[in-house]
Amino acid sequence: MTTSAVSARRPSDVGLRREMGFIGAAWSSETSIIGSGWLFGALFAAQAAGTAAVVGWVIAGVIIVILALVHAELGAMYPLAGGTARFPHFAFGSVAGASFGFFSWLQAVTVTPIECYAVLQYLSYYWHGIYNANTETVTGLGFILTIVLMAIFTAINFLAMRTFSRVNSGITWWKIAVPVFAIIVLFTQFHTSNVDVGGFMPYGIQALFGAIPSAGIVFAYLGFEQADQLAGEIKDPQRNLPRAIITAVLLGTLIYILLQIVFIGALPPSQLVHGFAKISNKEILTGPFAGVAALTGLAWLAALLRVDAVISPSGTGLIYMTSTSRVGYGLARNRYFPQIFAKVDSRGVPWVSLILAFLLGLVFLLPFPSWHSLVGLVTSASVLMYAGAPLSLGAFRRQVPDAERPYRLPAADVLAPLAFIFANLIIYWSGFEVVWKLGVALVIGYVLIGIFMAMDKERPPLNWRAAQWLPVYLIGMGIISWQGQYSGGAVKPPVNTGNIPFWWDMLVVAVFSLIIYYWARAVRLPREQMQELVARQAGTEMEPPAEREVA
Image 1: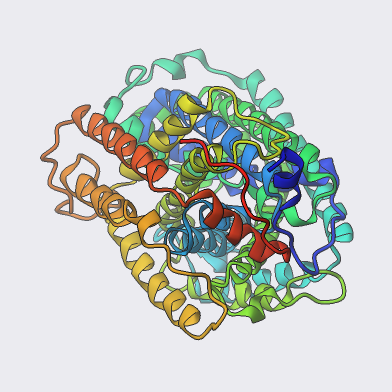
Image 2: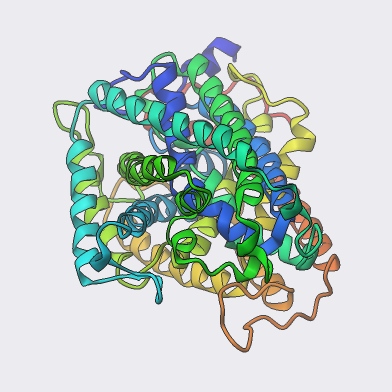
């Protein structure tokens, strides 16, 4: 089979319109990256790791850049709505695809409520009755306002993609300009003595690694894949999509590292008498950067940041409502979700999936009444979703080596397994309390998807052989987390055993990850079966394969 024949057999989306250009695609990822994470991440990271929090942002940034490069190749190769939910489906079939697809949907549907909580937490500076700073939870009135915000995000998403992209781009320009301006101004208030408070790494390197998922560092970077999720609506996606992802990640990484540096330096030394972990000023705890600005006499900057604290997470919540509807659409195209999720209106909006994203998002408001309490769960769900990407890339390189790849990940044989190791380390650092909750969520997801697929006469075949590594992977990560050093949350006594010593635990994760990576690659779907799944979504007849897949 010729390269052009392989390239022509591409999956396609029905009813969606390609109306988003490069800036719209880049800003769809950037507006997700620069959300509530920039408002709270620097404070929580400093409390957890002291000055070494800067290193945490660098480590997480490197990890996210590598994962983003993996997604850039996959997205350009198969530019589909809800891409992260669909790549594993093509590579390993429906059993593995359903698992990673559900994690894609779970992380997307939970982010909008988080952003709403962030809006209310900052807004409580002016409206005291909506948030309780002592318990760090929203009040009854705040809960109602959160629902109203989510309803507004849903309504805006009914706009045609061309109009929606312009609205989102306008919001994102603001969201980038404000933190960059804050960095410049707060550098003028830098106290070099703050860098030495408690020493560079006052709480140890173990606390530093734990802060990467739990303090919101990784959470802040999440969203770079939004261009993948909206790929079915991007113009010239083979060219624009990889450039959009890489641009958004590099810009976001630079902004976050600088924000952490200026936050540490601009804190009034009087707030650090008892160290970073003991910061107790309510203005800082309620709105970190605005509080620091106010305490340094920059009242005008504090006012600007409080305005941005409503706009910035609102923009992120808005785009995540968009991506949730597209992931639901993609799962329907995989035939994991009912076909009603794939319904689109005359503007190309998957309206049923959008409404259900709103309704199901409300469920996550109930058990998690604060920003911080949702972060660990969403971070791990997101990284489990990301873990499917390097596995898919490794499989595709051997299933369809001759397929068109507008962007080709350099040194993929090294970077793809490394990306998988990094994803699993973040899951491990999240702690066993988070991991077992994800396990429960996955069981619920299996039940729901199993019911949906059982009712669908056109469901794809269950590819058990290509997913034989999956239960070992999921259960194995649970056992390593249980026996490892990270509990997660504030449960006393801790739910993990701590039997695997520090440093050895990360070596165990790395070795286990490599075993799973090469095992999954070895049992990937054969070329013919993989192309058949692609053809099911392309609406084309299969051509008889003329070449053997690469071993």
